[in-house]
Image 1 (tube, helix red, strand yellow):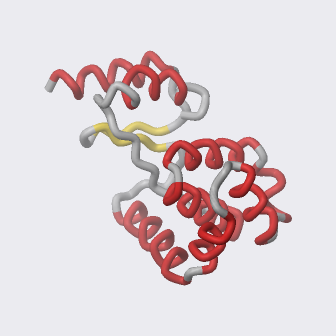
Image 2 (cartoon, one colour):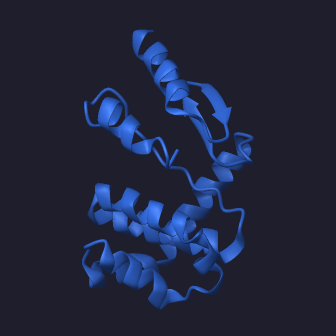
Length: 143
């Protein structure tokens, strides 16, 4: 969705017609876990910064295999959030538990690949062009 996200956001999310919800897929070990925790903790302070950090981590995923706590703190601070608040969230065992629980729920739903999209129960996987999203979202809005 990263390629189509700006257009979807402009035409559907920012207009209040659609809400985007992120569910983690923790299928790459520690990088998945700590990247998700970083995005979640950033998002608690600033919803827009969540998507900025999500995109930044995705674009730099080759760096995540060697990333340590400082890498994630620097990423969060670069997104403009308060460092102390971020670190408290990042270090909180409840945050890890929450992320793992969301991952467990998506597995129970049978979602194993990324990206996977669910629009009012219509699920589709893989990177999709904007036209696909527009068609699915317009259909859901007209129901």
